[in-house]
Image 1 (tube, rainbow, N blue to C red):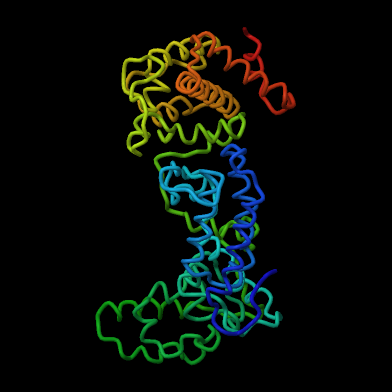
Image 2: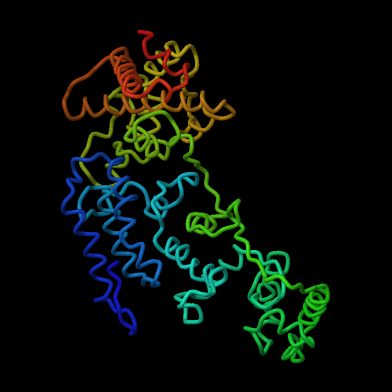
Amino acid sequence: MGLPLHVRQIRRVDIQPLIDKVGTRLSAWKGRLLNKAGRLRLVNYVLTSIPTYHLTVFRVQKWAIKKIDKLRRSFLWKGAKKANGGHCLVKWSKVMKPKNFGGLGILDLDLFSRALRLRWLWYEWVSPEKPWVGTALPMNAVDRQLFRASTSVTLGDGAKASFWQSSWMNGQAPMDLFPELFKLAWRKNKTVKEEVHNQNWVRGLWRMQTVAQMADFIKLWDSVQEVQLAEEPDKITWKWTAHGEYTSKSAYNAQFLGSCSQFHGNSIWKAEAKGKHKFFAWLCVQSKILTADKLMSRQWPCNPICSLCNQEQETAVHLVLHCSFARQVWEKMADWTQQLLQPPQNGILIIDWWQKELAQMPKKTRKTKAAMMMYCAWNLWKERNRRVFDQIAKTPTEVMQEVKLEMGTRSLACSAQSYPSSYVKFFFLF
C-alpha cells in the first residue's frame, strides 16, 4: 500500500513518495493530446485514487494536499505538470464541488480524507473485536463532530454508548446540545450505563454559575430521567444511507449539506452528448470560455471585436446568444426542431437562458433539448475559432449542417435504446 511503517511523527520525506507517484503518472500520459473531458476522467479515476490509503490512515498535512492539487489542476487545464493561473479557467475550489452544486465533481482531498477516516469510528462501534480498537485513532475534533452529526444511537443496555459523546438524545449528543455543561463535567468518557447509575453524570456540574447553565441542566435532567435501559446492546445507525450503514461516499456528500449554488450542473452532465460537449457547456454557462474579453483580462493579444458579426466586443454571452450571426443559427435551429428550441431573448445571460429553457420539462425532453443547445453553442464556438485561426468562414446554414452532422453521428454511434425517439427523429430532417 506504500504506507510508512514506523511510530514516529510523519515527516515530509515520508509523504514525498506519494506526491512523486502522482507526478510520475503524468509523465507517461500525453495530456496535450486529450480533450478536457478525457483529462477529467483521468483526474477523477486515477490521480485522485492514488492517495486513498494514505488519506484513510493519516491526516495528511495541508502542504501535501496543495502539491497534489497543483498536479491535478495543471493536468486538467493544460495536460502537463505545470500550469499558470491564466490556463485555469475556473477556480479550483469551485471545480472540486459536486456536479449538482456547479462543480466538476473532482474530490476535495481534505474532505475526502475526513470521510475516509470516519470508518475508524464506525468500525470501533460495529466491530469491537478488531485488534486496533482501544488505540489512538487518527481523528481530530472536527472528524468526531461530523461522526456525531452523521449517526444516531439507540440505547439498549447503555454499555457501549458514551453519555456525553454519543448521539443518543434524538440523534444528537449531549456535548453538542449542552456544551457549557460538558466543559464542567468531570467524567467525559464514561458510558450511559455508568453515568445513569446513581446519577453519576452530575459530578462536576455543581460548579454552574449562570442561569443558562442551570436551564440546560434542567433540560438534561429531564431527558436522563426518561432513559430506560434494556438487555440488548446499543445500536448505531448511519443517517445518510437508506440501509443505515456507513459509506465513504455518503460521508463525503454529507459535508456539503446546507451548501447552495446559483448554478446546478445536473442538466449538463445528464444530457445525451459527448464528454467534450458537456465540458464546454459547463464552461460556457459560466461564461468561462476564452473569448476576447477573457484574453484581454489575461493580457494576451487578440482582436476584441466579435469575428462572427464584426460589430460588437466579443464576450461569451454575445458570441453564443446575441451575435447577429448566432441568432440566425438559433432561428434555423428553432425551425429544424419544430420550435423545441427558441431564439434567445435579448439581454439574457447564458446561465439564466440555460436554466429557463430547461425548467419544468419532462426528463427525456430535457436531455434532448440540453444536447441540442450544447451542440449549437459548440459549433458557434468552432466557427469562431475557424475564422480566427484558419481564416475560413461558413454561413449560418453551413453551421446548422455541422450541428446536424455531429448529432447524427452521435446517434449512429450509440445504441438506439440510449436515446428517446424524439431525439432521433430530428437527426435526419435535412
